[in-house]
Amino acid sequence: MKMKILIIGNSENNSRVYEYLTNNGMEVTVISDVYRLRSVTGEAGNFTAIIKDDEGKKDIQITAGFIILIEQTAADPVMIDGLPALPLYQQDKGTQDKGTDLLSYKEPVVFLLDYFCESPMSATVCALSNAVALARKKRKVFYLAKFIRTAGRGIETLYAEARETGVTFIKYEDLQITSDVDKEEFSITVSDGDISLDIVTKIIYADGGRDAGESFMYAAKKLGLTTNKNGCLTEDTYFLTPTLTSRRGVYHITRDLAAESLDEGLDFICTFIKNDINNTLYPDIPPFGITVIDGNKCIFCYTCFRACPHAALQPDHGNSQMQCLSAACFGCGTCVGLCPANAIKLENDKPGTGSDIRNSLVICCLNSGGAALENTDRFDVKTVPCGGLIDEGMLSDNLALYDKVIAVVCPDDACRHFCGNKYACGHVNRFRDLMEAAGLSAEKVQIIKASIGMPGVLKEVLHDSSRVERY
Image 1 (spheres, rainbow, N blue to C red):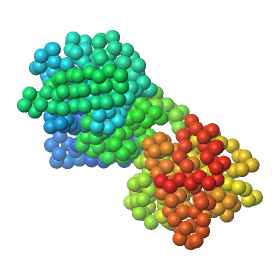
Image 2: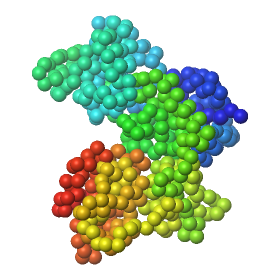
Image 3: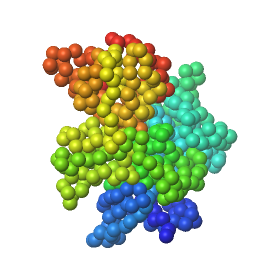
Image 4: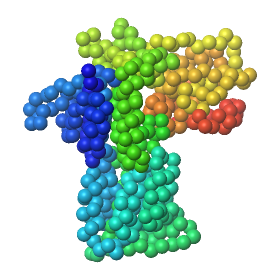
């Protein structure tokens, strides 16, 4: 039996993705209009999507083993000194050609990044790709950016193509833009710190921010996908690039794939799908166990449902309690730390060990800098799957065994489970407030944000017993 794949969204890559998957023996259904999607339930290998029919009068149920979101983010055009710039992201390349071809070929074209905010990687990919296309048409193209990004997949190749086609790169330190509304043109003075350049143009493609767009956000919400504060799924998130999302079995064709090969990204998806079908990708439960819910304690408050970054918790209306989809659970423990009824645990949960009073205990998430630490004569180390598991109860229990408890979590926007570090900070700070209200020293509980690449710095911080940080 063919594996069923559901493609949701519309982009210039729809036909290629459809062709690729069908050639790999998969049965593909395409829903181009994301607003036809009403809901998605289930887990990898067994999704059920409720779709509106073409007339929107009745619902259709579609089953699929895996889902691919192909809808792209689309920031609105921005105003620069009273004049609108062209949107950097173009759903239709013909629209871009129409905007530039109507003007004189002597008119320079400017791609402007990092002006309103630090531009994401997808903006770099989009700008470079379009700059190359225009430069090949013998247009004079300027690429202005405050930062040069080279860490993305295939970015170096795009930079090389842009240089070869004659794109002028300026890594600016100072940038001034004024506009003449009557002439509908911009005057730009840009400096790299040594040399200044004046550019007059009617055409600026600008990255106006990180707005994901209404249709994209609608699809992400209906699919139960975790987004960052800018509404993006995988953008600039190294551990999810190029196609993974927070929900197992749901993939995203990102703009970043344009920097390499779309087929490479599709190869990546197909490998995950085939491994999952053969039960080789996730054959065992996560190392810390999966979520187990005690129905006698569950108050059906939906707290875990809203907090789970992987859409692994769903309501069981028949039993009036929450249920865990085991194939979707990553065992991060975020739900355990947030459950107000203490009705959730990880099935591999074990009580803390240690019969002797030690100086300090470091509780660190599996992906933070604390994971590189070892027990020393100054502190013990306890690793948890995610900082979201660190709650007031865990802190209180361990303070009975240690003089000090220090939580180590990932820096902002680096949490593999998206928001576990933020939950940990909230729990620690609330516990410190309770200690202060009770007349106890809040210095006994601390929290540190540290990446896995800074174990040396972290050790120095841990040995500095006077360091306390609040977030």
